[in-house]
Each structure stands twice: as structure tokens, then as C-alpha cells.
Image 1 (tube, one colour):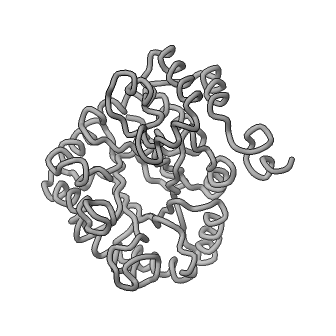
Image 2: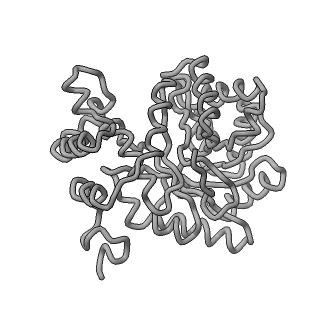
Image 3: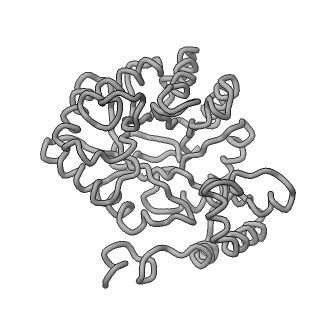
Length: 330
């Protein structure tokens, strides 16, 4: 396993992040425990979850599954860099969501209880709160840090200017601020390259891509379609994305076939090659899917392949895929 620092922090994390959203809804507890054991066996030490993951939003089932795995001992908690999230509602009453000091305190305590641990390594805001002032948010977070309940803080689904707001507010308090941003990022969704990724690099945040295969569309969906197999990429939002980009996806799968590599592994390898990316989140439903994802770490994409991928899935912007402000002007 390869490791890197999480943003400008001194924390070392694996270059693949184990996503746990399937634990409970699609993956049984026994299988989830097996997957986490295998992840440790392969050196994956960075686990990502959220307080709303589970059978129904807010029931906390996924955190509870992880907590019972930690409780089995054997150094499981000690070897894990644990990230969870706060923001989305966990109930119907006021203050059971968002980023008020009250909800931050309450949500953190509930996550600690479910996870059966005394601290969270990376506590992430699941979304920007347009109503909570940064003074309130950072004061609440600083209390958690002083209490030893949280070590680092991250964001998710932030715009570039949200990252700047957060970091400047933290700087004014002489606080470390954010060390990571979790965004949707894949070959088909490259909008973070305009401002989010440059902002993350500037402020020293590691970027953690979610949906690295765009809901399965980049995982060999056309091949599976020809073979008569089921695929996530042929339903819901993924089906609409496939319909819009079918020609590009066909070219992508041909390129992967020419390389002798699985499309899913190439999609992950492309993200690993991007400057500023800490590691993509993989969300295996089975142990076999976890094992397969590790292949991405051994794939090196040469300049010719990277150029061809840019042709199939062009970077956003008007001036040759440059980041802002060059993307908009000169």
C-alpha cells in the first residue's frame, strides 16, 4: 500500500479510502467486518463514513457496524484513521442537522457512542451551512479539539470560495482549519479542477474524490451490458449520464481493453495521478470488489494515455481546461 499525508497535516493515510456507505443497506454486518479486516490486511488505514449512513437516513446503522468491529479489538481502532461527517438531518426536530454549535456537539457525541471510540480522527462537514457563522462553527470545533474528541477537520461538497472562507476564518482564530475536502470527482465530473482543486492546493487540503467511477458508468458498464450482467451504471442518474456520454464511454472502454486493464481500475488510477488528490473513496459491497480495486495502485498511465483520456472527457473551462481564472479569461 502507498501512503501520503492528508493535506498539509502530518497524518499518513492510504491512497485508497475505504468508503462504508454500503455497510447495512447493501452489505451485511458480517461481510462488512470481513471487508474491513481485509482492508487492514492490504494496508488500507483510512475509513470514511457518515452519521446518516444506514438503512434509513439518520439511523446510524453504518457507524454502529463499524463500532462493533472496533469493539472486537485486535488493534482495529488503533490502526484506523477514522473519518465521519456531520450536517445532514438525523431527525425531524429543529437542531437535529446543520452546523449549529448545538448540533455539532450532539452529533459528535452520538457518533462517538455508535462508533465505540473516544475520538474521531477527521470530522467532516457534509455540506456548507449557509446560515451558521464561521465563528460559531470554528468555536464549536475548537472545543471538540480541546476535549480530545476530534483531531482534524474536513469539508465535503464545498465550493472553492467556501474553502477560502473557512480557512481565513480559521486563520483569524489561529486554528489549523481544514485538512481535507471531499468532492465528487471523476473523469466525467471534472468541475472541481476549475476552483475547488486549486483552492485545496493553495490552502493545503487533501482532495478525497467520492463517486470515482461516476456511479458505475466508468466501471465497464457497456461491457457488462453486452454480457447481460447487472450494473449500477444503467439505472437512475447513472443511466442519464451514460445516455449523454455513451460514445465517450465506448471509447474509454476500448482504451482500457487496449491497455489490458479493467475500466474501474483505470478510472481510479487516473484520479491517483492528479496533483492534490489524496485518494479516491472506494465503496466495495463485497470482499472481491475490494481486492480488485487494489490493482489501481499498480497502474501507471503514460502521457499518451492521459492525453487520450483528456480527449474523451475534456477538462472544463473555455481555455484548454485551465483552472480559474484562466478558464474564464486569460
